[in-house]
Image (cartoon, rainbow, N blue to C red; front, side, top):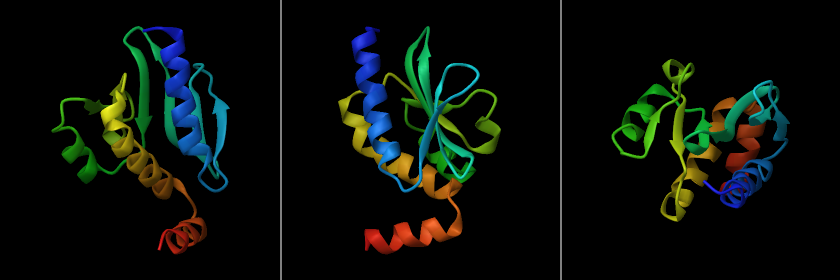
Length: 122
């Protein structure tokens, strides 16, 4: 995958994640861009041999539903906690990914931020 494509996808992920209240981005010890709220990770993205990947926090019920789609798979080492990944997402899945990233944020965010988010979305 071209570095330019990877940079563009990272910018999409970054713009979705950092639009969420109090979300921050760090580079973890593996060089992945990790997005956190209140010290808890909700999205991890980075480049691998397979291209650009995004992993996000989910619950097991949602994970089961997503794994029925051919482009999602269980995240290595964290999948047993409900995490789901996608490799090299194309234009068609970004709307769905945006919703899933927002849900991941809400799973990790403190209850007060979740309440504020829900009020703003109404």
